[in-house]
Amino acid sequence: MFYGQAKHSIDAKGRVILPSKYRESLGESFFVLRGFEKCLFVYTEADYHELEAKIKALPISNDGGVIQRYIFHYTEQVTMDKQGRFVIPPKLREFAGLDKDIIIAGASSRIEIWDEKEYDKYEQKIEADPQKLSEILNLFGI
Image 1 (cartoon, rainbow, N blue to C red):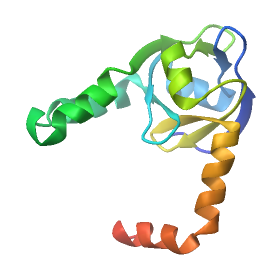
Image 2 (image 1 turned 180 degrees about the horizontal axis):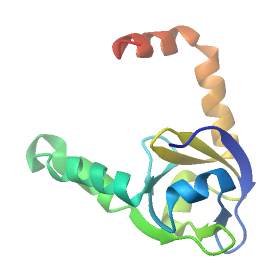
Image 3 (image 1 turned 90 degrees about the vertical axis):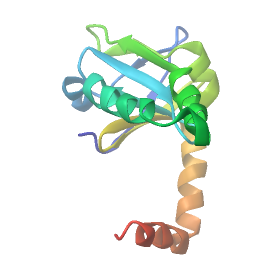
Image 4 (image 1 turned 30 degrees about the vertical axis):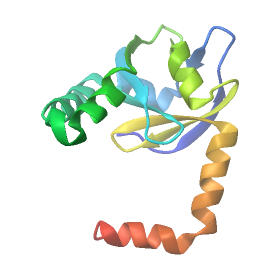
């Protein structure tokens, strides 16, 4: 499981150093894909294959095909080097607007990677409307 957050940066080659607390759980090879906001999701192989099975089971009709394309067209399997770095493919960096300063945040079964400014905007939006957050939690019985 992944928790907490850390500020990092992307080098000129698109490499990111993962926080050491995530490396062992993530494994040497893992999956990076588009998130549902302007961020990237990072999954272990096992968790990605679980997600993949659920998405593949969606009917192509009723927008299942839309979800399949959204996820699978922009998923990349990557590997970590001995220094704990991996390359975020250009099309994924572009999608999330990742340039230099980033936030790497644990989100239970996945890691999220955000541009630092975009993450700050997201946090401000959530903090500005605590009632909205309360409503969302109530929808899920929390």
